[in-house]
Image (cartoon, rainbow, N blue to C red; front, side, top):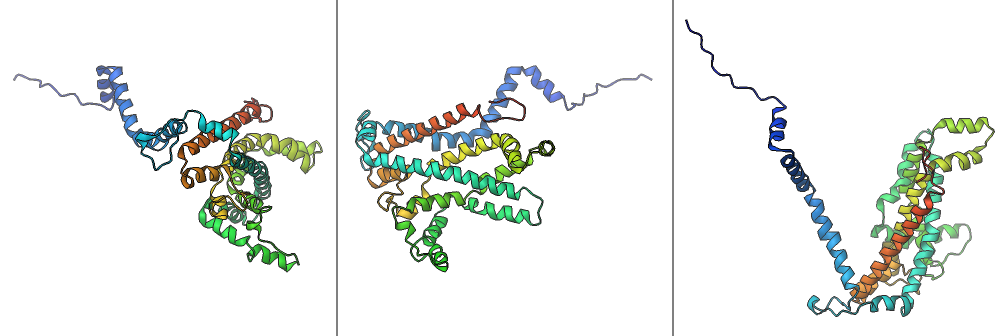
Length: 327
């Protein structure tokens, strides 16, 4: 009896596909993987080009033109550096907006970070209900720059608002804070400082990373609470402080919603709340000088870039990382 052997079809193992791809060549596999990556990135790339890159390049072009929105784009008149020359030499409202914005940022940002760090130190304890308090302090930051919050704030600080009612209980006569040129900007500062929840949460995360052994060693050496805070807490938190400082400074310069609501879009009273971004909005959408507004926007972008670069260049002198390397 003759025995015959039929060919057995080899079963493809889990590595057979990779082997087959390898036989096709490494270049083909890399191209297919790259194509798949671009397919998954396509929504982000479309948004980047359509919402960010193309409008930015268009605004750069418009900053050298005399464009007023109502004129057809094909009839835009090129004026070269005239918008920038006007901005720096012939527009007093521009420099007033710069002063108001600098005042706001230089006062509100440090106080906001100080409040955030102080509350974070208080909440960095194992108290009963501490999670509830953390949520309550963080809640204002969830509202962000909402119009509703700005409206509530204006109503609180007007002549008949809740703040004046509280002052009357202790015999202090109130004033129309939001309509007083001497106090309107300070009202916006208080609103910005009150929204310290986001940097507070970041400070809390940083405090959790400070080794308790450092505090124990400092206590053994006789250091009190203040010296521990100065010599242990602040150096260990310096990267977190740097991160919050950069973000909050940029946010401070970009303040718009509260100033717009408080002044009904005019920057009043007497231009006391004329923030840079509000002045830019008025120039572009009220005065219809979109070419000049585009020039203002690009100067604003470059100014923030320079300020951020200064922070990073000076950070190596006071920011200390746990690996012992200052960057």
